[in-house]
Amino acid sequence: KAGVTQTPRYLIKTRGQQVTLSCSPISGHRSVSWYQQTPGQGLQFLFEYFSETQRNKGNFPGRFSGRQFSNSRSEMNVSTLELGDSALYLCASSLELAGGDEQFFGPGTRLTVL
Amino acid sequence: QQQVKQSPQSLIVQKGGISIINCAYENTAFDYFPWYQQFPGKGPALLIAIRPDVSEKKEGRFTISFNKSAKQFSLHIMDSQPGDSATYFCAASRTGGSYIPTFGRGTSLIVHP
Image 1 (cartoon, rainbow over the protein chains, first blue to last red):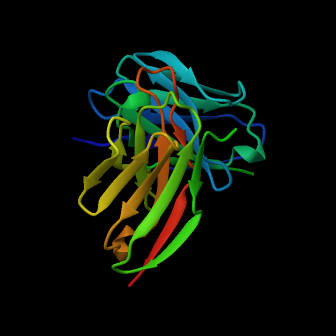
Image 2: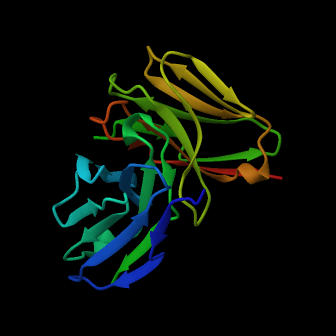
Image 3: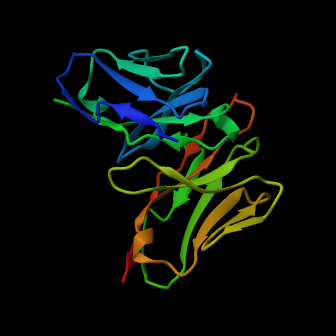
């Protein structure tokens, strides 16, 4: 069974631009969660989508948004990029809601904002 | 507010030694406590998880000890190997979907040969 895939793996953008990251969950998984990982803050939850609906949202500004498609694939968008958005963005999928289920993480997208 | 506090931030042990990483949580509603292992360039991978109805869970060389009254849980790696060198994250969440998984800041483990 294929794991969670994320594209692109690396991305360099400049301040003010916007970016879209993509995540393909494990086949059959209905939940996709997004996390931001930085050395200073660790893993921080962005949001979770389950059956195309946003179920949970972390404490991030509205510049961070996402969506999930009917095939469970998910995209995350960051508008008006800031230097502080430089991070590893991880996607995780699970069969059921992430709260009490094993999450399978992808390798992440390394975003650098210049 | 950090709901899961993890310590130590870094840990160095000799091959064959015991590695111990501790986590403390605040929200008594949490009922799922996983540990993740992350190698450089990879995403975290579930190592072992526990629910509060048991005080200990063992899988191979990895053991979680859980103290509900103290709101603490720890990961013990017995007979630590150089291949265990990675970053370890504890997490806490609640089954049911209304709680988001909250992670500790991570512990960088180095096992010397």
